[in-house]
Amino acid sequence: MSSVAANIAAIIKHIDKEPGREGLRETPNRYAKFIEEFTSPPAFTPTTFASEGYNEMIVQDNIAFYSLCEHHLLPFFGTGTVAYIPNERIIGLSKLARTLEHHSRRLQNQERITEQVAEYLQDILKPKGVGVVLSARHLCMEMRGVSKPNVCTTTSTLRGIFKTNPRTRGEFLNLKKGLR
Ligand code: ZN
Image (cartoon, rainbow, N blue to C red; front, side):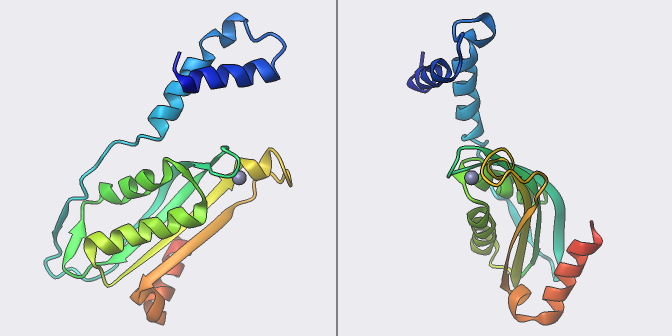
């Protein structure tokens, strides 16, 4: 048994009256496998291409993501909208979702994922601007603490002309609204 599995076994023993029963026998190993897999998202190469003069907004909406809150080790999950206006490079479309996945699958908080995704795209693409909006449900808010089910937490960050140009900012935020 790995040390992770052994520790999960200790937790189960602490919270369950019958920790030796059949249904729980493999649980420590299953959980250890899950947490190992979850926090090791597949590596990806952020392939970029010449933008060939395309200089309008590229938006991907409704990208599902799953993460673990670093304060409670409980899941938070939801959807993201990622947009940018290219400068000289564009990124393969599937890579926007990959970027969000890559930054979500570790111990996190929602604000940091939002910033890291924007920062990553900024670094790789040097675009004219980037916008990232995440909306998520946090089980640490729903199952414990304030116990408020179905509350959606939204975080956003705008970089470059998404921040400085009111028209671009408006276009992005309206597009986001329209897509709902
Ligand atoms: Zn939490």
